[in-house]
Structure formats: C-alpha cells, structure tokens
Figure 1 (tube, rainbow, N blue to C red):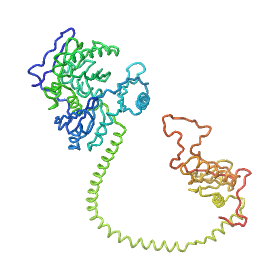
Figure 2 (figure 1 turned 90 degrees about the vertical axis):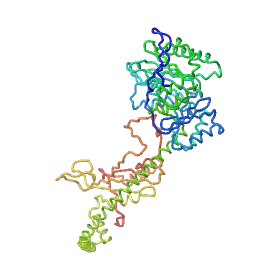
Figure 3 (figure 1 turned 30 degrees about the vertical axis):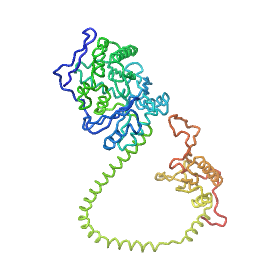
Length: 576
C-alpha cells in the first residue's frame, strides 16, 4: 500500500487528522546515495546495525551491549563486506548543545575562536564539534554557533574498539540530533506540497529502541533544541501517548522563550508504533500541521526499500537508512584514536594513488623511450662526426695549460715584495692570515669578498656589490671585506651559538681594532629599536632551537678608520 501524505489541521481550521488516502501518490525519492555501507545506530540501550546494499536495506541486527557474545553476529557481517564503510550514528544521552554568540571577527579567525571556546567549556576527553548558525543581520553582526560535545564514556569507547578493529573503513561519528536536520527536511519535502513548506519551526518526536523518545527542534531548518526522554518500559500505549503529548506541550512552552510565535508556523512529526499513534489526541498538538507516522509509513514516504515492516514499532532503522541514503552529512566527529587511524588510512590511499600513477608513468616512459630510440640512432652518427673536432680542441687546450706557470714560491715572493714596497696599504692576504689565526673548531669561513678603496671625499665603503661609476676616484688605503661565518659546534641551541659568536667577535675586534666591524642581527636577539610582538596563539613562542641557516653570521670589516692601523705582516716578512 502506498502512503498518501497525512494531514492534520489544528487551530482555527479544525481538530481531526485526515487518514491516509487509499489512492496515494508514489513516494518521493530523496537523493539516495548508492553503494554498500553500514550504519551503526548507538544508544544507551544497545545498538542496531543497518546494512545498505545498492540503496536497499538487506540486514538489520540488534546488540544490547558491546560484549563479544552480543556483537559476534554484527562483526561477522561487517567482516564479510570489508570494503563497505562503517558510519557510527550516536543517540546517547550524554550530549551537550550550547548556543553561543561570538564577536564579529573575520571568517578566517572565527574557527580559532570557536576552538578556544570548545577547549574551555568542555572536558579535554570529550569529543567536540560546532555548527555555524550564521551571523546576526543587524547590530554588531555577531556570529551564532552551536557548540556540541559528546561524552567519551566507557560505553562509547567499547563500541569504538569493536569498530576500529574491523577491516572496514570507519567514516566517523555522527549525532542523531545534528543529522536529524536532513531527516526532517526530507520528511517535509515528502509530505508537503512545495507551497506548504514555509513553516519556520519543526519538531520531530521519534520513538527509538536504543535510546527512547528523541525530540529534535529546528528553526529555519537549523538545530535549535533537542531532548532525549528514556523509554518507560512495558506500559500501556495510552500512557506513552499521554507522555508524548505532555513532552510536546512542555517543549512548545520552552520555545516561546526562544522567540517562538504561532504565526511563524509549526510542524510536528511523530514517529511511533501504530498503537501509540492511535492513542494520541491530535487536538492537544497545537501546530499548523502535524503528522502521526509509523516507521513503515516513514519508509514509504521517503522511498526506502525494505527498511521497515508494517508491524515495526521503533524508528531507529528508518532514521539510520535516511542517514545512510543522504548525500549530505552535517557534522563529522572523531575520537583521537579514530583520527589517528583515519590519517593512516588516508596515507595508505595516497600511496596507492601514487603507485598507480607511477605505473602509468612507466608505461608512458617505455612507449616514448622506444619511439626515441630510432631517432637517437640517427643522431649518434652525427655526434661521432663532431667528436673528432672537439677532441682536437681539447688536446690544444691541455697543451696551453701545461705551458702556464704554477710556481707557488714565486707568487708568494711577488706578494711579499709588494707588501714591503707599500707597507702601509691593507692587503687581503693579511686579512686571510689573521682571520685564519682566529679560527677554531667551532667556526668555518663560508665566503669572503673584498673591495679596496673609498670614494674620494666620502665615508661609504665600496663593497663587492657596488659597481663604481666611470671616472670615480678612490683612495688606495682603505679596504672592505664581507665575510660569512658558519658556527658548527652549537648543537642547534641559540644560546651556544650566541656564546661562540660573541667570543669570535671579541677576538676579531682585538685583532682589527683599527677597523669598523659590523654584523647582522644574531638569532634570538632583539635590538632596542625593534618592537616586540607576542603572539599567545603561537605554540613555538619561547623556542630557542635554531632554524635552518641561523648558524651563519654575516659580518663586514671596513677601514682602517681614521687613526687606525692595519695588522702587520709576520716579522720575518712571510705571508700566509
């Protein structure tokens, strides 16, 4: 039997609910997602595993606890389909939903602000997340967020251990109240004509086997309130119907504090067993439209195949099926252990992709190499013809090189003679000698560049990066040397580097006391004219570990300054 949309008019227009018509329209499809998957709906009273194959429900299994004797059938089923992912849909009572107004910061900064509030308001072991409810349209335009917490209690950990030990890919933790937004939206589309979907408020009451009576309240399609009332046991249907009516009245009174107004429109969806549905007094449901549905009627309305039978009393499976068939997920949560396993799974998948691409690349390389072999053979004969001429040029160059003088003693004699004839002029060889004497096992010279002379009448040194203009006059008694020193015995610690650098600079200043010595700022040192900005969010603040390249100190020696002297050559006239 196909289900017509139930209608219940309450208020000014009437009081009785119209029964489903015999000639009902076909159920609407709600964008069902194909493929095999498992949805484990977990509550405080047990868990129901729903197996969806090709969009159809093929197995429904219940386990009252995560003990091995209760879950072995569920585990065997999931192990039989290792490529089917597992979604954990939680409807436990230990959930917290707190609405917060946050300052109107930029969209790039709001996530950090939300995370700080989550860390502050909830326990460190809780599994947390948030829903963005949008910004205020007037005033300061603050952000509205729903901060969410799921207690990581012993029962949840035991169920997670069962899932994470399976070969199936665990797709994450999802919450019934949050994902219920899509569930209610699909019911609204299936049971209402397009022109009747303009109510601002919706309430869902679903009687679930693993949890109890779950209430979900939406405003403008977004979660605003939720409550879970545990089942009362084996009581008369009339008593349970009265409890549902009373809980709805209490919820509506509470919503009045949240700006609820009858004029904005209210829809109520109640999913219960047939005997409870028959006992509910529709006149007590003060809503614009109300729908009393059995789980089987929900499955027919949403076009779910085999998710419910005519005698089903609980709404767990149709809710899990709606979640499994939906293409949209509202909020994914992960425990720390599950997040670590997800990273490994992602890395494994990435490696497979890289290997597949590498195989394709090898095939392409093999084909292109075979094609290039033919053209390469024709080039080989051309290169062989050219090789003879190049070999002759190489022999001539080698002969010319052998004619060059390479007498080190003669070169040193010339340098010594130049120093003796002009003893007052700086000599770069003296710089090399003196700096070499200062060297120890803690420092190395990476590079040394120098330039002789200052512009006539000026005080600026002419460095190696400076190109003099044509006709510029220079004095010949000045020299500028740029040196890059690498300190190697600091073990990555800034303080040891600073101590080694200070010691070297002190020794350098003592030798070149007639020169001006400058150097770049050392790592971790802040000069007086620099502003100190502390970023409390930066976890690396206070870290004294050297970064790459910070052990190289660049310094400049220029002079001699007025009245200064140049280090002399060795007393015996020798140079380095």
